[in-house]
Image (cartoon, rainbow, N blue to C red; front, side, top):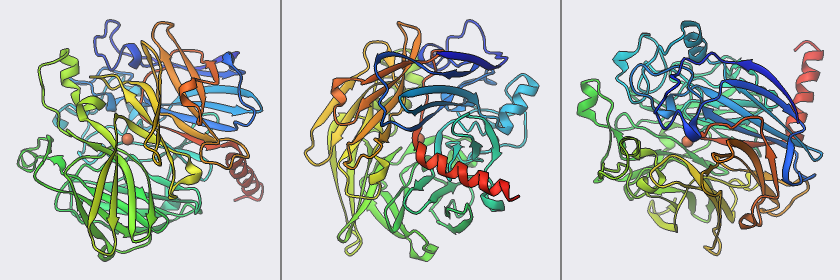
Length: 505
Ligand SMILES: [Fe+2]
């Protein structure tokens, strides 16, 4: 392994920290690395694996003003790139406005998710709640050959080189970026059309917008999605012809909100609502479908079948888990992040466009979330969803599951005691045609070995374990989302960019 340190952060976090989401598997990093020719610890790097695995993590640098929530941590991007049987690793902090301001001050300036916004030292800020730091640490997608990071409560999107992980400024959609409301955590890239679909939300009417950015990076569509009040949507879905937005009955208590308190409550007596809009449709075209009360953090895929829109995602049996007195004070405080406490299970909704009715069914008894699928089969009637299992009581991934949606069978793999993974991305094999002609790529942190590894599975044989295990220069923190971008596509965009700059564009 050829390793170089390219940056060091001056962290002001306490040496004797007891916060479980800033220590152990969530210990933030203070070093930025550039490592080539990663050491192969087991197996060998497949020659038909070409592209980059990008993973975002919450990486706090300063103590919170009062109470740290893991979603407050500054974004750090990790890249593991593969080509011709070799692999490299890079990690860089995302140079957000908030991160740079706090580095200059040497302390936190904005109140986080578990704090009263009035604590913020700055009057300005981001997020649907307001007066938050846009940490850009939630998701990462690739659009037009550029990695874009996002913030869960709406904010800017930061542009990053997908190979070096260096920040290249903010995305501006050729001057039309909705900076007032921002973009929410999970924009959706449709690789077939080159479009990126997104929504945003706020405490102000109409409470939501839906937008489309085309492959020229122009914001070609942006419409109001009126909701009955302020909501907390996290994800959306899309099919070939429709975008599917949502209004789930987990939202800020309206009376408390009038007093300035942001307390999310599950309203069990209200339905879940899916808003279906033609991808370039107007506000008046939106049709709402009612389903059983729940909250969905993430969808896996959606497609059209006859008169129906089929949507797969993770139904929460208990979106507002009560403090049951079990576990440590930290497990009780962060029970909302534990997959077993939210009772997240793969679920299918069928929205009938003729009758307006919804049929829904649980697809698996197993508690999983953070589902991924082969992106080449997006918006198709697909077969496989790959998802994470969680360590009970904690926001930690302890294994992965391959759900076969046609047979209902499941293949499982456990990372082992004290080993935690990240969201697993699906990397189609070069020349692959079948849906499971693919690899699964993830980063694991082994607490016993005090080391992190990038592991690669054959998507068709998950329970056999990794076909390849690569050592990273340092143990990395747990985090939220990841993605895969094919090398061929990235190189094509790079050539286009080089050609454009050669003629002065
Ligand atoms: Fe998410």
